[in-house]
Length: 78
Image (cartoon, rainbow, N blue to C red; front, side, top):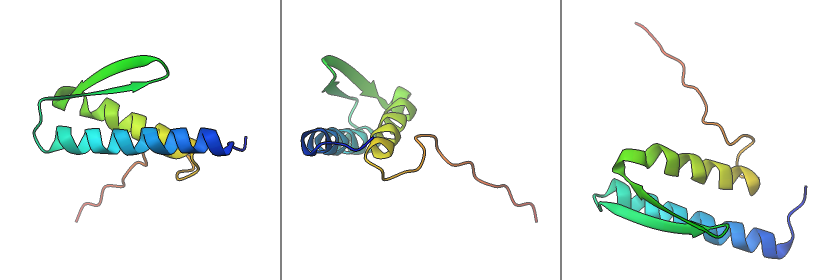
């Protein structure tokens, strides 16, 4: 489904907020809060993975990824 300009702008803004929140969590701030779809969620280092998943979902909706799921990484023994 193609996004309207308004939908794309909203998703871009949400993605920018989520990336900034992830930066704050990773660099040591205890908690950050984001609001989207009428809900407010607080993220901390304990649920950094949830925040990363949210970012992947936004990127997938914007067409930056082919899937919202993280790629698996192969293991090389040697």
